[in-house]
Length: 266
Image 1 (tube, rainbow, N blue to C red):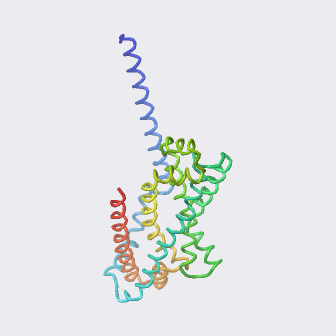
Image 2 (cartoon, one colour; image 1 turned 90 degrees about the vertical axis):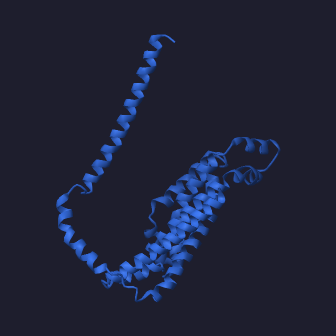
Image 3 (cartoon, rainbow, N blue to C red; image 1 turned 60 degrees about the vertical axis):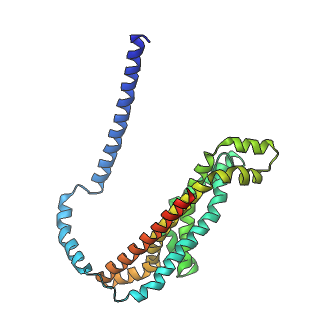
């Protein structure tokens, strides 16, 4: 290799490094601007808020677990809400993912329409959906389940579709060459390849659903969030800290179960 070719390679590598550095600098600049716009660098606000934070912390310690018996059923409902929401998410997400993935969609128009629907689901926060479903079907765990499932479908189906899109195409081609129908191609060539990934995504979403279910109760969708909101309204911050610690304990249990399930699937 001539010195001229080596110089060209070195120059090209230098340009690539400069572009990467420029990209990193641009990202850091955008992050710094976002922090500035939101007031993160306003030290005066933090100084003025420090006494209020100290006062709030003093009212939250020690936690008051005197009403713990009243939280058992709401915590159970929160767990049930997370499981039911995850199950409903799977039922809705898998067909939509198959329609959204380019290699399983009937045509490009259907694929684009499915991806648009998923984007619409993701664009509405679950707390807003919870308010709408509470107005539609009343108070209780049901609106929470519907809100979690509808919002999560937009995210879970997107992840499902990306996993399906990157499967090995050879088994699909072999199934088509053998005269398999579209349904047979999906069940025998697509799903066996992606089931571990889909299960992993589903377990992560279930862990998220438990945390989100605690928030859904704030808008009247049942669960421990209702008790948390009641304590906040009555300015019982010692009960608030106790409820938060109870939620934390349940979250750790759910995360532990999720981690164990993921290990079994590997």
